[in-house]
Length: 147
Image (cartoon, rainbow, N blue to C red; front, side):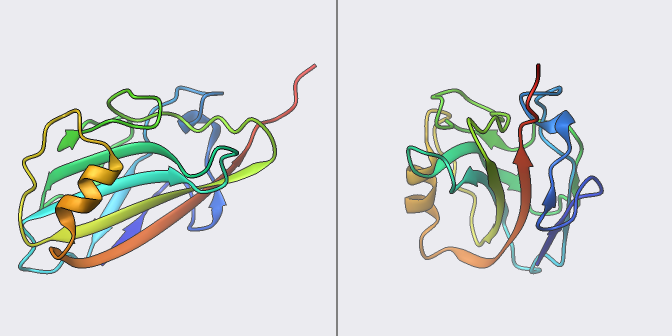
């Protein structure tokens, strides 16, 4: 399975447009080589470099298995709670230094059908034992100093 973006390379810099310093929308993602038996996809974006521990920026499940791309700013599947306790994409906004934003994509053998108030821990528990394939795409971002 493969996850890429037309806006940044794996390990490359996340464009400002997709951060708190820009439009704050989710970046476009391209999905490939999904196993034929996949029933749904899960997408989780988190920041392992956050001062308080891993910070969840986006938690989405029940994305249709035949999805080939997620356009910039699109809402797809069921979006759950991020670490701000809000639904949807929370734009990267590192308080200091460069942070990594890891987009985790999972192919599952079932749909999850969870409540929209579910967080990453709940999604991870629900998909345990149902992961057919997984991959990641990492973007990096460092806020520019102003003034």
